[in-house]
Image 1 (cartoon, rainbow, N blue to C red):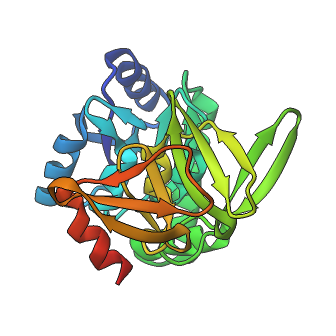
Image 2 (spheres, rainbow, N blue to C red):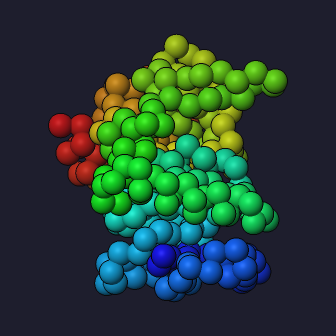
Image 3 (cartoon, rainbow, N blue to C red):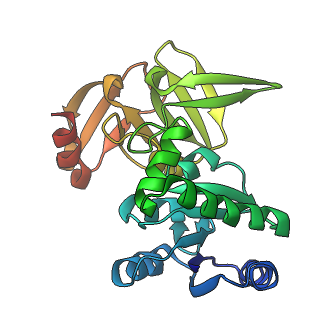
Length: 253
């Protein structure tokens, strides 16, 4: 089995590599890369591996963005110290999510899961992956339709159809609903943007990710920027840069 590793921490790479050698000697590590840029270049210029082991946070960004830009052609087992990206990972070609420090039993189970899916479904890897995503309740295309919000000891299911916009506030993220309610989230805007439908949500600027029905009107502003009026009202004025204004107008039309 030929695998690619995306990992920017040497101790984490060494631990994973040693576990593979000890327990899964049939696994051949083709390459170890530490950045989104290197991963994109490698996937575009090399034969498709059987499986990818990928950390979430690489040296230059989230690996989730890589799998949005480039179809790896194979499933991904995510390896990370953070549990905040589970839904996004399974929407980005993921078949398993291993928390660091990785235990041998979980690693073996992830590889066996991959082998079992490939054998039982009897299809090329890409179709195996699509079948898996659908079986996990993901719509075609892999975009999430709902999310769980933690409120004290409770978990509240929210449909993304109810969400007007997400707003970055002093290092945290706030989810604003059309009914006027708002909730804090653990997810960063960059991670949220990767996992949701770009036909419904647009990243207006580094602080606002808005749904189409929430955009009430656009106003021309100084230096070809656009001012966006949102509903419900946003606590801050929302501007779209000159460079992004045309993309927004095309998206709205």
